[in-house]
Length: 375
Image (cartoon, rainbow, N blue to C red; front, side):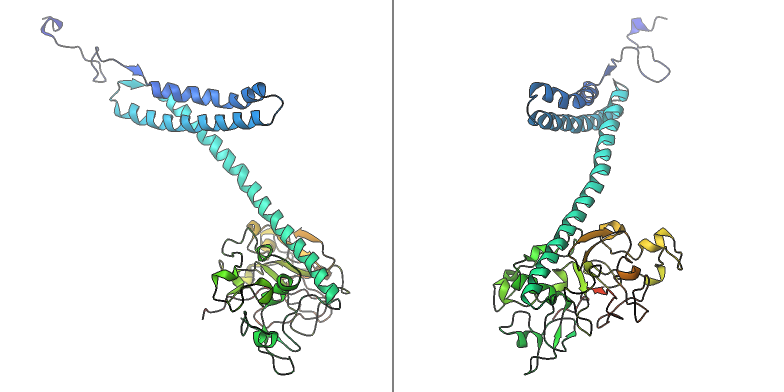
């Protein structure tokens, strides 16, 4: 019996009738064309505008837009092909249109991540360089002494008595002889804002995401002018990214000290920061004799910032360098720990806490204020 005469259709093994119309997805084809044309755009731009960088820039933007369009069209085409019940083909075009732009985007991301990190590292170093120059200006006006807030015998405390006070004695809680009281590490650095025209922005590292530029207008301060205040607000640790030499004790900083003395750097890894808890000191071991730790153990002693690769360090001669290890001070001294020697530096040392003192005049002990309870 002739089935076609009765209007039946023959069926293929995959279940599709012979009269079903199968066509290639135009969306998949368009996506493939966008993928092919995109890389040519910068060249076309340079040809059309050969004397200007605008040609390449416009072409690059056009190529990027086409790659993004290809990715979108490819994804939609894949979905439509999957739902077509076999009536649409062009799967290969769509897959290529999805894979190539995705690889391009991943490549751009992998390239820009280290570039952004390097930019933040450089900006941080620039901040410290500016701080170093301001310290020299300050020292020139203060008998060669580097910034030291408070008065005679002032100790390191978690916060000032009154950061917006009208007088120094009131701010630091000094006695009638202008002695005693307590000050923060950041209040010594704030003297550079007060007396050396530095902006609070220069005390914020771009890698320190929980630290923000200090703005006195956000607080109910008695005096709004930056030069009339004594610290970076009521919670200064959230407005200052840098550690400074622990100056409240026997060993004062002057410009006549050893030029290779480290005096400021990125945050101390052994002290809590606004975003990260202090590191575990037991995991740290220098990769030099006699400690012979691994590179990973040595890097554990670096600051939290800059992907753990190292820290920007300001030295007394005002130069800044990116040190890949924390023991970059005098005698390979660890800039973030207290030396175990009474006469020299120490690559390992012991971690500090509020009130810690350098072991000797060659011991860099760069500390930042701990997180103080809010009040």
